[in-house]
Length: 94
View 1 (cartoon, rainbow, N blue to C red):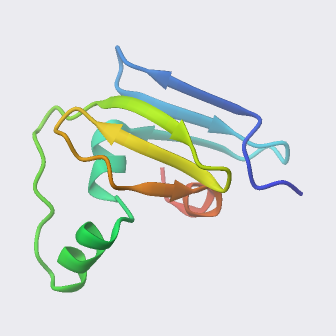
View 2 (cartoon, helix red, strand yellow):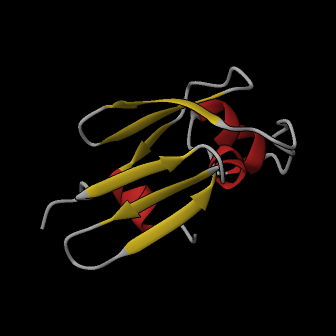
C-alpha cells in the first residue's frame, strides 16, 4: 500500500490541509496544528526540552514541495525546514 495520499488539498481561505489515502484514511489539519507539529530538528529539540515552539496566531502555509517520501511545508512566518513524511501525517491526530 503506497504511503503517498491520492488527494492533497490546501484550503487557504479556511487554513486547512486535507489529505486522503486509497485505504479511506482522511486527515484534516489546520495550518497552525501543522506548524506546531513540525518534525524538523529545531522544533523537535524544543519540544524535547519542553519548550514552546513559537509562531504567529494566524500562521498559514505559503508553499508545499514534494520530497518523495513526504512534503516540505513552508509557512508564512518564514519557517520552511519541516519535511512531513507521509507516514507521520497519516498517524498525526487531525
